[in-house]
Image (cartoon, rainbow, N blue to C red):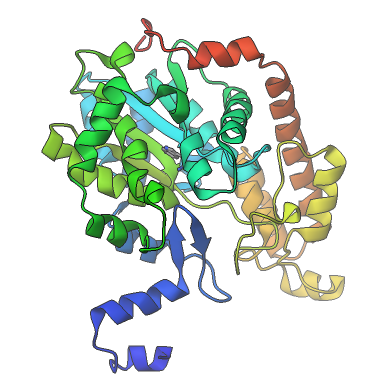
Length: 411
Ligand code: TRP
């Protein structure tokens, strides 16, 4: 079945249509791929998932409520979609606080820049709104999906916790937990309440599991759903069953929370609100597949200055022209240029970014110069992270992960 037939209306079956669309662009918690030779179509994703675009008026409200400039990730549209974020702001305006929930599946030793994005943003939200935060380490999820032993998954969870703590979270307001250690008690009771209200057909519809998949996969989604409800954390939120939850995440996690939001009112909870980010593009460009297994497709927080320099100079896809003469004449294609994309995420100075885009787009600035600026920005970022991580001791990890009340979490 080809595209022409689809467009000419020869294909009437909705389901087949949908399947064909899915062959073109796949986004779920385990796979992100654009259609052949294309980019991720985020408008289509918003429409398909049924979330909303984050508009300027919401960003203005955030600035107003927090009395500070919005984070670059908001200003630049890195966090671009949401579900009921306006409800969170309405409640906050009335003086009702909320809590933040995010997480990480500890599948690798070292994080790359893309992994840091939700944590950098969550740290800003925590500081700006002065609210508590729970961080779930889904060591169980990675055991189920990857070829890892239980012990190895648990070890990676603790290692990753150090990188997360290095993002600057406030220990007075942050509880980090590993599923293998924390699931039980009130958390487990919520998981089971959720499980009873999701059918196998729904799970298959949302996540695309097949009959050959082991039942661990089918039973995992309630584990990621449960932290959306304050009653899963009695040591933090006892007597605060009405507390709202805001989840910052990359948009590939949306399926989990679609399921959660469907169940929430049926078990007497608010639906969690979401604020969702774009994917961080691979060095090779936004077209084609991102390859998690190719170390040259990403900058890792463990990369040395030399690694960063080499990777950017060698692999960062450039929108510049082949020859200097042509470049001076035509300018760079900023739409496909990875150094410009990366600077959009990490260069904080709006005026400088605009200047670079203008000069580079007009051919007055060369790819090499833009790459040089990016190397500086990323080296500084990675250096800062490395220093912060080195200062995180095992005792600090234990302290963040201790099941304890947080008496000052709303102050
Ligand atoms: N499933 C996520 C991952 O593989 C981890 C995760 C758990 C998460 N809970 C979350 C991510 C909440 C964002 C928000 O990385």
